Image 1: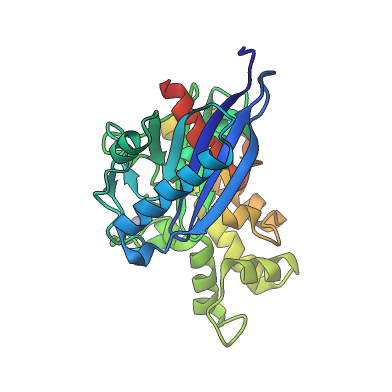
Image 2: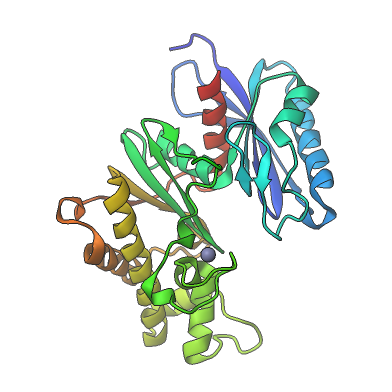
Length: 322
Ligand SMILES: [Zn+2]
């Protein structure tokens, strides 16, 4: 245990915002605390170079705001696929045009002259929950973030599985029976994300029953509100989404055998909450339909860190490299 607090600058890069923070790891060894935080819009449509400039600027602003702190380095979690060997952005989709190919890690190391580590944002999220959130104290944690899309990470013995290309954890893009024939945002079809993400829940409702609010397409929250009010249409759609998610979790558990599963993301932590009995029961029902007998009791927990998870996970990834 260190005798002095340690400080890490942490950045979470998403399609809409760039969140930056300085985390203090108390000398006592407890949970890291945010001692500085800021947020700027990503303005992704301005291109990769403009986004890079905003990120470097956000880090410099954080370091200048707290010059008295001896910051050990910078941990970043970024949207897209991050090359695990270099920290460059190996791939990014159309949400961040020009982000693919940006040499994020190497350029920041040179510009800042300090240790810099980059990991995928969902992998960072999983690391955060595994180290200091719902997965704390467990040897292996499968974490799924369910929001407008579905992504995740698998953490074993404190380290996130990243894969050869850095793309490990695209759990929204696994084959799913209920999604057969439905086009997916990734350009394939038949993937879990197309029936279990917040966006998909809204779309499924509109296809079956028409829009909740006739003036705009429904979103997951609209459907969940109906479900929580015991509206049979809402219960129907939430049940099907939960069952599909659970069945996929069962398949993933058969491969990975995690000690615990942690669910997180906007669908879970949305303003009105997604902790409906229907959703949770249908996840367990789906899970039981696929998981092998010894895995049936695998706990399925709700993440506790919310927006801080990727910041804390990116910091842990940096600390593991020092
Ligand atoms: Zn897909």
